[in-house]
Image 1: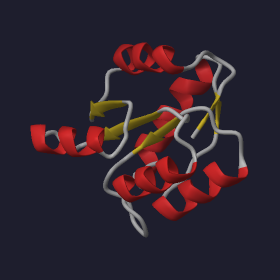
Image 2 (image 1 turned 90 degrees about the vertical axis):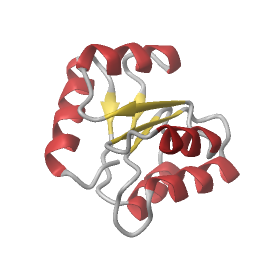
Image 3 (image 1 turned 60 degrees about the vertical axis):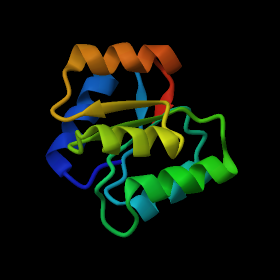
Length: 118
């Protein structure tokens, strides 16, 4: 889930090329709706999104489904931002621009190809 269409498209392409099934959301409200209506097995979230920021989405999802791994992928790179994200319940935290190899390495910790990723 990311409000930047270019980044969303790049990540979706990377994931699909590696065999992952994907859903995309361009705002926080849409991300919550997709998680509630699909069997999402991993969630990649930007923090700065319209309608509902990524940390709010993360907290809401954690209240309902603690088992879904959540990866924050964001431009927010301070130590405080990382701590805030991990304290909110993220399993991992990556800073943009993300390296494809690093992204795939982190994804493999939580799921395998053919997994449904939002």
